[in-house]
Image (cartoon, rainbow, N blue to C red; front, side, top):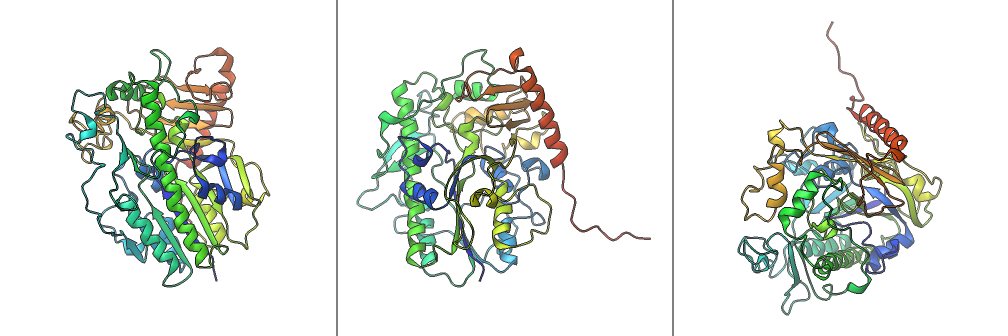
Length: 491
């Protein structure tokens, strides 16, 4: 019998928020345990720093530019490849819980899964303490420096064991499924919302992070420092640059607290798997679609076309089934989320039926390889005349009362802020090609927080030239995909 598969996807979870990767402030015992039994990839990167483009990419093995999935409003269409559908067509019972942000409205979801679950629990319709409405108490009014901060802090769970939100409902439903699956083999795909902002979490997770052990945050960008216009504009319009270190630390720590709640919820699913007797024979994957600023650079949210590691470097952990060779531990190789479908296809023996750009991670998992890619890529932004890519029809971002206004107001303009860009990152350097403004180049050995843009430094001229050539090769190699089977031609 083929192996069962569990794919657990968080939203906004940053890679360094894991204790086993050396962060003394992180509290992630369940993910640390998974890393000890399987493999954790220290240098895993998403292919776009916002939800929908990233999910379209990691569910297909294709880069965002191949299908034009560069905004939150351009989702997978019925004729595009999606890993879940490939598993279902191969005979897997597919249970899909949590978020969508993947398949367009109107496409029948029974093509992708046998069960599309949105869990329900008592009290789920309780007052929305995480509301981002203009009059939400935490925002403090339009003139407050908290208005765009997304910071709430401790959630009041009352006399309940946890705050009754949709994530908890979906996690509990996933646990029930794992304990009593209707048939095997199955794939459980759970896409939760946390630690997506706003920054808010209930006890016992609120406060679990030792505030005194937080790692250094990236500072607010200096004027003329070479950081992109989008980041500088977000910092200015979010009004957080004047916040004290202590206030930004609390944002950062609450984000860590939220990650600890995700770790606990993940542990509930894997504990249920152990209790069912199926843990050893199940492939378990945990990762996130992208990260978020959470106080770094004086920003809190995300955006589509800047590529700092806090946005693009994500957790990726894989525990293969017992029959698959594994050398447990941490891998430093550069990997991409588009490698996930290739890895699942390799585990299951399923032929994908289309050409993609992912590479199986099993050689790294088994210890047969130490290297994987010479560089990883992330991309985003738009051309100036791509009016349909401003996303204004999906979010009311032109209204300053909207909590996302600092970013969306910049996306709506005709300046360079939302311009198309691509990141190329190696182990030691990061390069960003920008269509409408200065490129970026960072020496990550000397400047891991990416504070000093050295694209104009003659000392790095050879490195800059190598990156420009590598970006060109990337787009030539991945510009399109040709169907595996040619069409019949008329005489």
